[in-house]
Amino acid sequence: QSFTLFQTFLQKKDLVKLETIDVEFKMSTAIITTDVVNDLSKQSVGPQVPTAFDEIKTNFKADEDFRVYNEDESPQRVVDHYKDMRLHHTVAFYKKMEKKYDFTNGAYRKLMTIEEAFEVLEDYVDASDPDLDLPNKLHLLQTAEGIRKAGHPDWMQLVGLLHDMGKIMFLWGTAEDGQDGHDAKKNKQFALGGDTWVLGCQIPDVVVFPEFNKLNPDMSDERYNHMYGCYEPNCGLDNLMFAWGHDEYMYRMLVANNCTIPREGLDMVRYHSAYPMHDKGAYKHLLKAEDEERMEWIQVFNKFDLYTKDEENDIREDFIDDLWPYYRGLLEKYNLGEKLKW
Image (cartoon, rainbow, N blue to C red):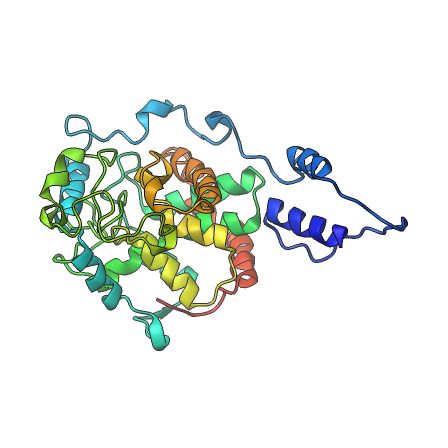
């Protein structure tokens, strides 16, 4: 029984599926004490999270030069994007988009493979991103390869490849809904990308461009413009509504297609844009104690999501011949290798 508990512990620590553990006990009894478990956890047998950003970066950009959000220094497209987000993202808008992108009872908008979806996103440039003006496909490849180079589990590498693909909603979007195209300079993208925040309660000042908070219609609604808003204290992460975008859509798409990426990976997809929460520590009054460990995994992922961005490291030409065969194998492993519901 002690060994079974220890095996479970190892599986949780590494977050990998262990098919077999080739260990033979020749002793009549085995006692695994807390001290032994704690000692082993310190000697982590899995890959280590890089502690220096230089281990992740492929460029010489200073840390403080990433994610610069202010009206004087940010590109105008970024300022306009976040102003639009604050103006339009409300509880009512969330429920509208949730209905539009429903996957219940087998509903979907189009059947495509991941490879076909990549072709659709070939020229998509994110209007909300001040750090990269190249197509989002390059960012996905850089993130996935950065995670792979660091030796993290293959499901996390796959998350790196997939995490922004929900921006494909532009295929069914309109200007009114902030989803009318892939051109960052011509089209509205306020419901496709950008930092998200929790809807239905007071918007914290730690969001980017907090000066736009007063423009949000829900901040004039007594149901939503206070600390808890429509939520109960410590209601838990999965009960919160975040500003609708590619994160929530892609999470729902993966679940609807019965993918087998573990919950830690699905959390990375669903919450990686929630910077006020995982980066600034907002909303602790709404989270459960067990949500803290989930935040740690999202924070690990976001180091790669941010610091692998590099306009000089264009690896798209390597995609089909060198990289795609590897990632195709991961897609098949995690039940995403066929035509999928989008």
